[in-house]
Length: 251
Image 1 (cartoon, rainbow, N blue to C red):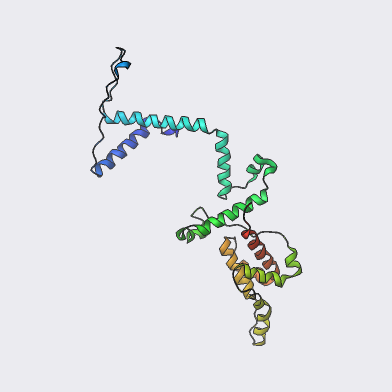
Image 2 (image 1 turned 135 degrees about the horizontal axis):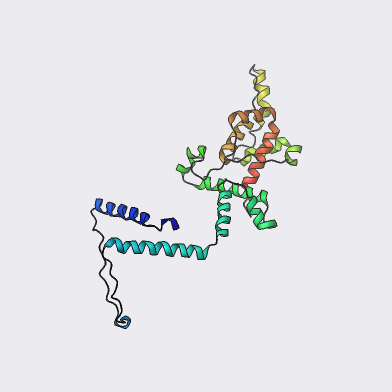
């Protein structure tokens, strides 16, 4: 802001404003009528100052505004606060990790939970935003709200001991029929009996693609097919974990 306190900046602003006022047929700037100095302030010294041109009046106002804003910002915020807020902004927009924030707060924050809550917050912002912000700009990340994240990692006992039950939970968590994963179990045998071999589990692939698009997870259709074909239960574990995490509310 200090860089704006120079004659060139004011001249550019003045010419722009005067030009726009002329185009709009507005009244030209004029010198305000000078106010008479109160008698109690008369000391018989120098005469009262009077501006000669409108440009001189607004030049003085321009410098006063710049000086007041700079002084207020310097008094209210220190450079260290600005540096920290910039790091917070970079973390919230996905440009940097939260290492510097964790270092500042020490043991008060957990890096994994903080990153997870940030991702959940961005998901909610995308879902609640206007439709024009959730359109094509979501695919290329142009709206600033969309952050593509990786699939969550980790293992779960639920999927290890009862994968079919977990698959039904995934379908129910997305609002689909809980019996949908049965298609992956019975459809290969049915299609093979008809002479139509089926190697891609239909429900696993459909659910995975739906979750990836809903939560903005990195990936492609080719990767979804490979995951669903060669490690179907691992794919269901990932989907179940994502749904569970996304439904949690930040504490």
